Length: 205
Image (cartoon, rainbow, N blue to C red; front, side, top):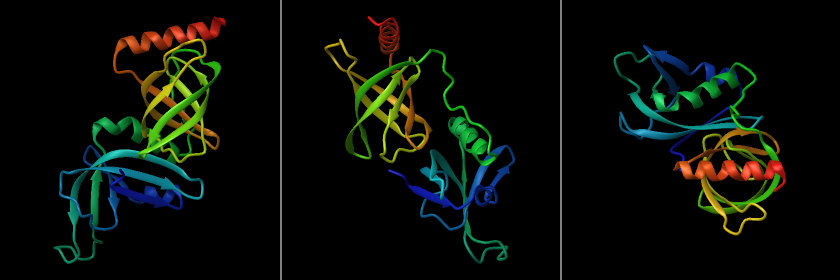
């Protein structure tokens, strides 16, 4: 569940609130949050009308109420991006600068493969179709609202196999037709199994 959702009309609106406090990357939220200093929040940042959204964790760094020592400063909350979220922050900042973003560094080739994929998002059980498969992940064609940073448990069965495979995945890319998923393997045996599946699909076996 998202604790804080911010919507921006333009990239420039976001840039006016983003700053560095020493070596810490921060975002100023122009209202005082009902959250303790030091607490962690799930932050969703969306840009309209493009409807591009990013989701990551932040930490409440400080809060400033109206009427304190410098009343000319507007009240608000500063949230900081922890080191664990720097990769997602880099993607966000690349989007702000209108750079071409490559969200997935593919170390293995993708093979065209139509797969029925079952997964859960926001407590809903959903079914969509994957268009390809690689050791890195898959492209999921969907019209459901999924955000960059969303983590899913995906379940699919490759043709010719009896048992389905369930893997953890993260949304790392988003376009009008669907999302790119990157697998987060819980154990090496999962990676080995997907590697065999991709090899068999590539060879037509």
